[in-house]
Image (cartoon, rainbow, N blue to C red):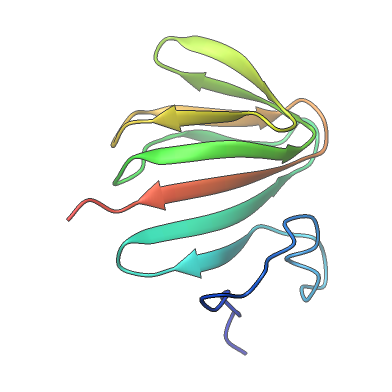
Length: 109
């Protein structure tokens, strides 16, 4: 079965978006030629190793708290906070608490 992506005009509840999966996991909300929105679930202590994205991005904390390492520093991103990075900027994430983040990548043309 194909992954459901949100349709234009469809309201998305970021707390429950992946409810159709057997366990709460990371899931793409929107993916097209211009952008990608991904809801990422990170249990406390888990993370995403250093990587970069093909375009500018934002990381928004929907719940919990994550540590983001980028640009030579580590910062805590809390509920209702976001961080913006430029294209190809290396970064890593580690959940301090059980967390949900919303990643938005804008694809350079």
